[in-house]
Amino acid sequence: MSDCRDCIKWKEKVVDGLVTHEAFFRYDDVLKNWMQVYKFQGDTRYARIMADPLQGFYRKHKDAVVVPMPSSKASMDNRGFNQCEELLKYAGIPYVNLISNVSRDKKQSEKNRMERMQTGQPFQLNELSVDHSKSLLLFDDIYTTGRTLIHAKELLWEAGFTAISSFSIGR
Picture 1 (tube, rainbow, N blue to C red):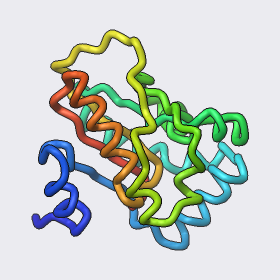
Picture 2: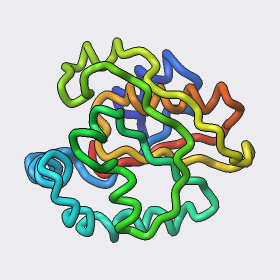
Picture 3: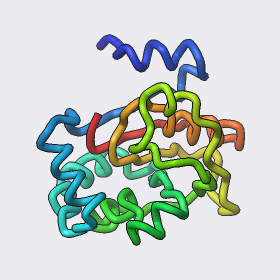
Picture 4: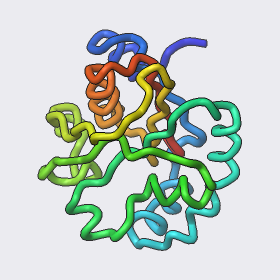
């Protein structure tokens, strides 16, 4: 299986092992509309739609620690929920909030590709005891440029985790 263009570019910039990612669906108009209602209009009932694919993926990786991508304080204040955590809750998948978003920058969805790629490290590690030999699975709702996930993976790599991959609903 060949790497996508994003993977090839990221492998030139970061530790090769941090580039692995799997998405369930292509980010097309249908998924974009679903995301609009779920995430931006706050209809969390839409999380049920993704329970089956999430559970199927988790069954293949039960020994891994699932880490949802954190929302910024501004997004939490505005939306009232973390979209990744909500999806995992509906699917009944245990997770650990290993990182926090401390960014005061504008939301990723408000940035163009160049602005996203230039974003500084928005995350910090939380004080939780997670065995560093465990595999980590970072979960984000949508993969756009990979910048956010790479920031999180680099932070966790520097903290001593070596088996870090990621997955998302769409890409």
